[in-house]
Length: 206
Image (cartoon, rainbow, N blue to C red; front, side):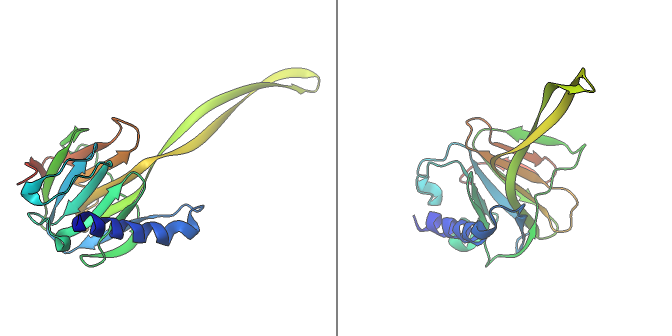
């Protein structure tokens, strides 16, 4: 259970730091990490206990990011669930920024199921965490009188809804991400997408 408490401690520190500015359009967090690659554990339905790697059962939708082949506390780089996120201050230097997108035309795969992904880079890893939002538009039409004549006026109303949290992982200095993770409390909405040239699916215990 210590592993989960450490990761949650990373996340809680970021959430508490942002509480006072919750009403602002706050940027996410970017970490330049001391590892030329990452292991991404994508748990859209949480997971049972996995004794082979020392993971206790943990039910919430979440993602954990580690150094490759290292699930120790010191190997933990980032944690994210649908409400909070955080990056290790011991392994990554942090600055404010927003998640990157995978570049258009990149060969990718996407899954909504449990997956462990290993990404390998030629430079140190860069992890970005932020909110996952969706803008919805609707058209409202109403009739008004202009100089005694009726006239229909259309207005577009846009609303922004927070779906959950979003993460991107790539090499430091890259203009696009190698992997994206979106976590939502809505069943089936969470997803993991990756560049097949940099990242490969691996066994959870691998």
